[in-house]
Image 1 (tube, chains in turn purple, green):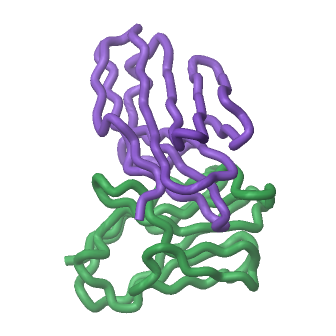
Image 2 (image 1 turned 60 degrees about the vertical axis):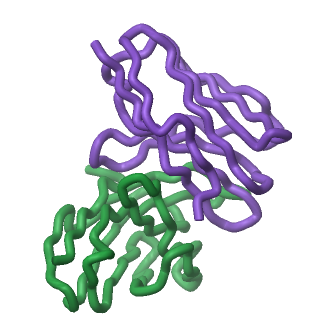
Length: 110
Length: 114
């Protein structure tokens, strides 16, 4: 079963615009991570936010975490065509494993 | 060279055949994982291993088995492949952070079972 669910499933924007993806999860977590996957390739880790953190930045990425709402968002600012990919959230809880959501497919149009 | 290497990258086989997917890593991590990816379903955990003597079932282990031959090697076997095991398979590693830290993924093994 999926712990995290991303919203929207697909997002299409113009280059230069901001892209926001949301992740909701069901049970308590130790941390939440975001990954990127280019078509047919392996996933690449983007950012990790711990349960006691509310916001984290990395370059053009901004991640927020609201544990009371069991939700997180990933904001990509000033998007580029090269940002076109699938983005997954993954949660780490009491189990010794990461559980992935079903992903958001982002298309950035040049 | 890639830190996490999967072989084969692509495989087409027939129902009932035994298939082994291999994973090797040069990151020196103790923890290794096998995930399966199907369109629209994200990644689902098949098996994971926290060291050579520690093997654990994941969410969808039925029909699969694994072997941790060494710290750097973790292989996934399908004893008798069936068409619904057609998927993209990923191996991943992580270090021993408290909780679960960042995963490092291989490039995937695309398996088609006819």
